[in-house]
Image (tube, rainbow, N blue to C red; front, side, top):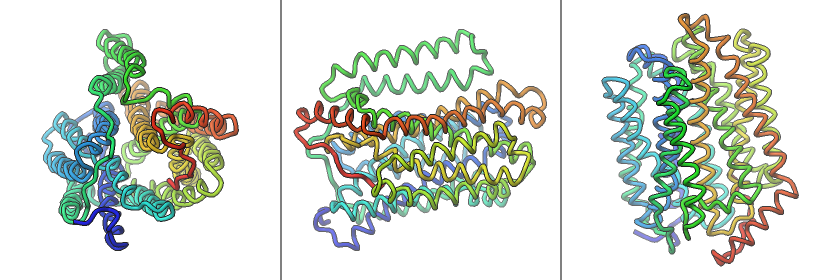
Length: 487
């Protein structure tokens, strides 16, 4: 098989298509699952916390393993790890479709996530090595970003059709033909590659990240049931605090840490982390609340609930590539301002104006949220790598990707906990009042995107990024990253 430099233009496009197939099944899996949650909850007789774990078991494992998967691929081979990810993700999908109870489903979702962690970051590395010319790479990343929009647009409709026509287990069958086809095509057409100088493993740092995210998520999700001051919840909260303290003390002592804390001296990088967590927390909470309201309160079937979410998904599909071009032309500031304003306005329509009670207002709120979420992704990646040395830009982008998953995990956990605390015996009757604080939290997430985006995209922020790059460059012997990624 030829090396990356010897690939024909047609072969490069085929490699891009294979990588996009992996992104499609991972992204589609999340959007489809949200539509199926109420049906799954009725079959398993589970509570709100059970539905939360169905989502967070996946995003939690994904967030914990993304950086490990990327560094492992650099050492043992990107194609090899990518193939392993496709195989594990496909196997996990089969197991999820056969799950006899909620506990099994949550465990199988974690298996899915182990495979998923080997796909997106590794696929991005493959794309980066395949398309070395900056303009071609920008176009390839634009296509990559468009697949996320396609999955968001198709997920609610495909999920609704499958749930109503076949059953919720069918949502996992979609992954099988795509996963198997991508596995075979990868073996045949994707060259193997490794990093010239891969980063060393950091098992202690990895363990501390798992403890921090796992303990924090468990404490938030289970607190409404067990009690916020119960010994078990306090134990998990203390474990999360201890793991965070361990990371802050241990990581600076390593030559090649899992998370280089010096990155956070760059205001654009710190801002990208906060914005990613806030935006994806808003997304996770928005989808969770919308699904439960449309199906359990309004009484819509899965297909019609999916149709109601289509305006949000359609605007995301339209705005994502436009945002990438805008970032490339004018920088991240304007897209971040648009994202913050749109997401905040959407949250306010639900929190203050009860948009769920008016079809027109609800439609407008979905459109606004889709615009906000559609334009926020490209500037997140851009601000994360701004000013970073080239050898560190990939690690910075990986931290941004991890922050996205952390945000979605916490969004579902916090919003679900707030909702569960306000719901008593009559679920449908209590939902509107119980969801009001949750919508205010989503509004606050949008406002955070606006404020932090404004603060970390100006002249002062760029100066801190340059100062951070100057401190990092002697260690890496590379010039700072000055290009503007399209996504």
